[in-house]
Length: 222
Image (tube, rainbow, N blue to C red; front, side):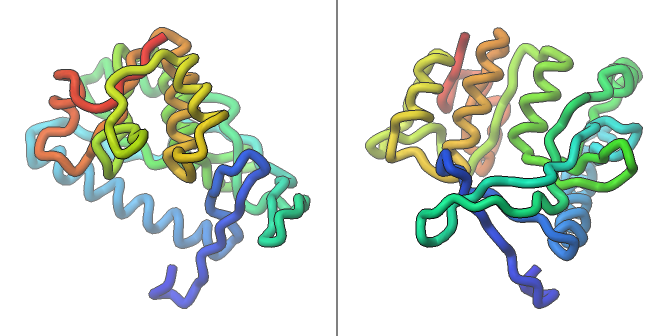
């Protein structure tokens, strides 16, 4: 965005979650950036012999969302204000049939977090919400959320294991857990409530998925 002389805009919700505000220019950059990352991941998977297919949530209405007409934010003075929702949406349906068809044919879907509404408008959707909705739809055994740290850090140490209730309590009460980690922890707690094993681990490690399955990182269980 900065290379295109477009300034990123971030807003804070009343619960303290910081997220990107999506106007038209931001959406334009977001779609370009996300699909570039999508194809980079797919090309690396193909190099490793994985039959990967790069998609966005727009394709086949994999992610159908409803545009947020208004959102409540907390401004720099600490006051709550209502502003236009921009091109941001909340997912209301996942095309499970299409995902299962792709999986049954032996392909691995790689899905960029871009959704579409009933009018065909592209929408920025929170990637953690995408993880949550897809997990609830296809019920995987594991949901691995990759970070740039080794797991949930409390007092500088990785928390080994939490129940979904404990994770939700930390989300509500901890002043140490903030920003993106706060949002991820909440979504992880909700996914774990459905009986899905959630692991928060470092995606910068050499074999992050394998290590997460072997017990590294923060495990969140029902």
